[in-house]
Image: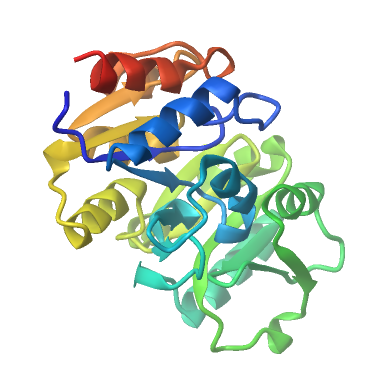
Length: 273
């Protein structure tokens, strides 16, 4: 599979182990791929601030490399954060979702392209705090009237106890489900995004920017928010720990994220041929 020119990989449950660490083998294999002219693109629900340490360990922390952030809302240069493209939400989306979230009694957070998280309730939810811890976003409580209307909204999320999201989902109006790309990325996260803001669309769009076609892209993932790129890439890898939907759609199922599954697949399909 020497024609592969871009590796697009999810992070949690794919690139890193359950302790959120990169293994030495994964680092070595991905550095080898980049040294051989293959782009290595992290595709994540996190902002750029949440992947800086990983980029540094992989030697990708410069503007010759790129990151797809916020589940496809934008692709940015890995060092400067300069956007290659953006597919965002607008302030009217924020106001509508804030109102329905309050009505359904589920915690909402708004994520901006510059790594800020806005919450409108002073009772800040545990999962919002946890999210900022892992992604290094700046957490800001602001009443609705104090949220600036010119913020660039990458995505809006329900971040709450799973049972609260379970209770809210059946009552989410159909017109909102139809308007946004909606995804349950974790038991405690439900995300609302621009319909163009998917990992799959972003991988293809970044590939075009780099002169790389879809059949020259290898994708890897494990969860619902990875499905679009598993379906659109040229060759797709499901992790051994992936949900059944990903395993059913992928071209190959590798070992788990705790056993160097990504590195093993890259070795097998790129370097052993």
